Amino acid sequence: MSNATSPHPITSTSFAARAQNAAHPLSAYLLRLMALKSSNLCLSADVSTTNQLLHLANAIGPSIVVLKTHYDLISNWDYNPQTGTGARLAKIARRHGFLIFEDRKLGDIGHTVQMQWTGGTARIVEWAHIVNVNMVPGKAAVDALAEASVKWRERKRYEVKTDISVGTPRAESIESDGEGDTSGGVTPVPEREHEGGLDVSKEQRDAGRKASIVSITTVSQHFEPVNSPRSYEDYEDGPFEGIEEPPLERGLLILAQMSSKGNFMNREYTNACVEAAREHPDFSEDEDAEIAGDGKGQQYNTPQKIVGLMGNDIVIVGRGIIKAGDPVKEAERYRRKAWEAYIERIGE
Image (tube, rainbow, N blue to C red; front, side):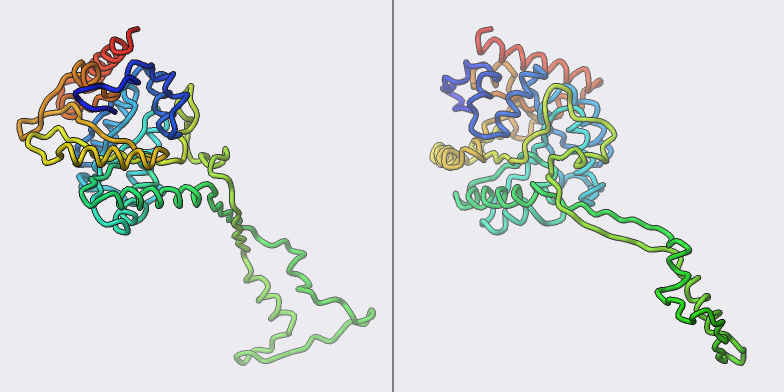
């Protein structure tokens, strides 16, 4: 993204061409995804329930390349890492071909933002490809998030697979119980014992003990590359056609500017954000204003201004789509307008 008053010369280059030289694997992937889907639209899904979020993601997914979330707005967010809201959302993103951007605006000391990003209840790093940071606490927060993402990625490259098998032992395996016949052809006299007033032979007692063995459970674990075919064996359908799985590398957007009226992000702050982003080209990017508005300090823009004049690559739309009579149709209209502004910008 670029400065609102003087777009960077690279904005006249196509997304496909820029993808070939992008330093960040996730940036390269997103640029290719945008070219594939002919979309530079992001939906800001500011809703309050899991059903609303998942329904929007599934319905609008074909039109967007990024879904922006606020997980802490969801009143019934399910935190289960395998079957919860984040996992289900990631599944929809995989099916329709879009990235998830958690608009968390992390802003605290380094150790705290690391835990908020990779741990805690939501485990954001597990399901969101991108997160953003408010750099008011200083560049240390960016350094800490970059470090945490690298460590998570290295752990994630190999998943622990657990196999559990349950079976009933064969009859021959319990008949002798390891006791060989050493009688030399002589029939032994059964040894008899008294149990609870009853005369019971040793053979009868052992038979009862052996018959109580009904099953054997075996648990084994092994490490497997995270990108192996089995990693997605629980998904009923494959990834979006025409492009591979997103890379494991995560992205950080540094909040350099905001579209809210009267915000305190001055030029000095914005320049510091750009400097921090340049220090981590493999992880971060500076974030400019978005398209949105609500009469509560939020300023509206048009796709033509956002993309054509300001040089932004992606248009973020929220209530303009969500509150429409036909959100799917409105999302397509915004996608078309934003893409036309991009095509005009690069002169095609």
